[in-house]
Amino acid sequence: MSQKKKNLCANIISEIESEMKKSKMFTFMKPAIPKEVAEYGYKKMMKGKVVVYHGFFTRMANIGSRIVPLSIGAKFAGVINGR
Image 1 (cartoon, rainbow, N blue to C red):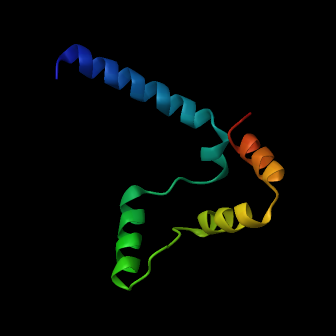
Image 2 (cartoon, rainbow, N blue to C red):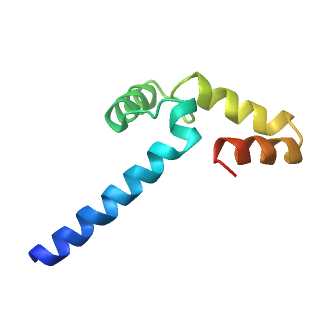
């Protein structure tokens, strides 16, 4: 990869990271570390689990999306995403 492409990629990544820091999503809840998620999923898969949720918030978001009306879920997502 040329130096020009590397600089362009680095600039794009830094712009994305700065936008992520502004987002309420990443201040409201801590993002999961990919390695931890993969290890957790692998351990559960080896125990025969088909579906697993890494973390309390993920589990509650899944359950909430089934029992809360769509309009309320959309408003909550809008608040979290800063809209």
